[in-house]
Image (cartoon, rainbow, N blue to C red):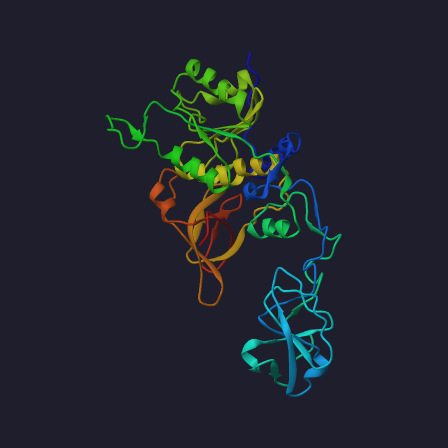
Length: 407
């Protein structure tokens, strides 16, 4: 007799289960060149081996001199030119200056730079104005980073600025968590690829493009497999093939309670179900389990359910497998229109998030609340999060919002 399925659980409990499973299944580390480190998760601290800047240098094109010689208009003798990338080993004495370019090392004895637009030059005599601040336009060694500083920490996601900092410190590669591999399936005999003619009762497979692009936007390289037929005997070997080669098998459709929804029983019989059905809307039938060596997440088939369950649950698993430390925060915004919820489930309602002329985030709920309404998703850039239990929210109230992308 097949073991009974777990009961429908709260959304918070589903996230806790995902966190626990991910923590027990952390992926191995690998050395990755900086050119391929974008959106990857760091697993070892980056400790500065040098100061940044590593030497005193000029922040502008101009003339380096001793500030004590520039009290009021002063005329200084030009010794020569100091360019970036080389050191002429000048030593500036009283009444002297050196022409200098941005990034060039400060000559010995000098402590201040005046920009070239502010001086007069007559042969080898440079006249500088008074009132220049001591240390003007000089970048001091170590003012940004001191040798020994921990500048990047484990669990941090690397963006362009973090990668640039590592490069400035001389790192060619970094120790990162391996990026999870993801196999993507859509299910259903009714699905046809876009571009082909539709027969009666058929629809185009939009979820394949939706799920692939969600993953690509998060930095993954998903592999799309053929559409799964509504036949458990044919589904199982294909899923097991994917489970043998991928860290996560991600499916759309086939997880509800209909006659053609075979995935819950297949995973229960041949793998392990961590949870099936979460008290959320849309996305209630979402399934999380394991098939052979792979994690398995079955998303519902409606497009908005895919948005909600991927962004809040599947993405959380992928983050956790890599040990990502920084959470993806929601934002808080004022409702631009009233909302009424009559059911007890946590709800993700589509909305249009904007920043008004006063710098206040505001979100307008989309009235099309059916989870099949893809146009409403395309017209929205955020999901409004309405907590458990029924309730009403009036215009002007503050709500939590999950941005879908930039707004």
